[in-house]
Image (cartoon, rainbow, N blue to C red; front, side):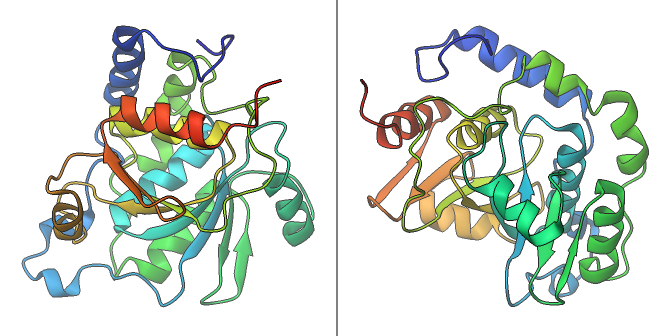
Length: 253
């Protein structure tokens, strides 16, 4: 898979099959909001005044650990994909943090910026977890099965596509997703390969944001893409893939 052009038609059986196996490998992490178990949804985790900023790339197991935690915390964050060969976002991380290492979190609400996935997860739960802790095994399991999706997906979401536009769109795209959804994973890989920054609206099981998704799309199915630059709104991972690669490619030579 990774050796071919990601914009070309794909074998959907292989795509969905390997992504579904990746989901199985990471069960139960990154599929639900921990606020689901609360008897009073009002005490569920709420988004901070300013969105957190996460610099990462989809294929990285340690970035995956942080994204799983963000799903559990039901947070909306700004994602800045940093694929290998990144033209913009890796340089931003070097300027802000002093080194090119991922994941890298910036919290404009507290002025904190930090590397190291384990420390980021602990920080997020301490700051935004309302006294909750990560689900059992989330931190420890990364070393055992966190790499499985990277292997099964053969490097998808790792490298900048050679025909990706060099300049980002004026407005960030918006994606309703949750970390361990097989179809959403395929779309996030494409966003990474195109180095497109986006707002990640987490809608894991029990999410307080599910109502917003239903009102916006008429369904609770993910992924769902909103592109304010073109006015496009769509579901169905195949349609989203086609749209992204057609809209955000350079002119073919």
